[in-house]
Length: 211
Image 1 (cartoon, rainbow, N blue to C red):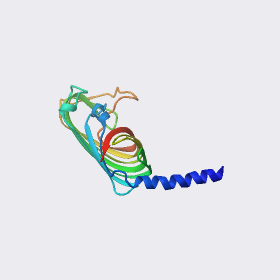
Image 2: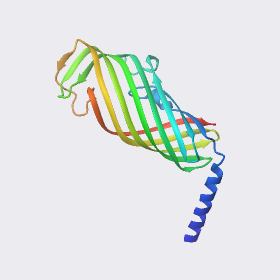
Image 3: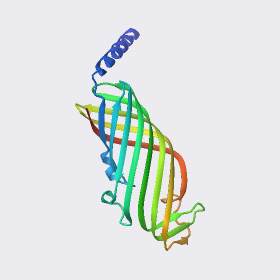
Image 4: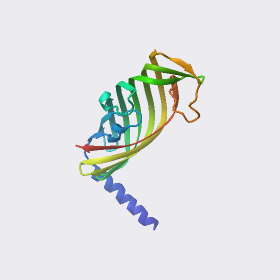
């Protein structure tokens, strides 16, 4: 039994590299689910280039404006952009699939105007306002594990990751701001200002073509 396992391992090890010699090196992806993102809908497009059979570099850009924001009438002048840079290592790569791990850096910036909303201060008090300009910056570093499944030149990519993230939130040009007690409760949605850092978990689905 052990000899059979060793033989199969050797055959697999010889077969996979020989098949990967002719694999295509360039991929273009998009993320359809980002268009219906609950917090900040946006359009994303990305590329991946294989430097070798195992190593690939990827970039991803996201953009949005008022035409894509449909969640809340209190939000206007919505602007969003993001950039993601990653390097991937293919654990197993064949003509049918690519199992990979990677490290990803991301940054995004969101700006919009808000009406009839609130700010939570660090001491728990609220400022309720009629209008304000909102700014949110976020960056982070994730370790990822992903699987691309190929159907000819079309493919879908499933990934999940975790890592460190830091965000900054700012409100300016506040109109008719008044202090109020905090009635959000433990599970309320919190619009905190300033820097916040912590642990981040991500997962997603991409679709694309390879060339």
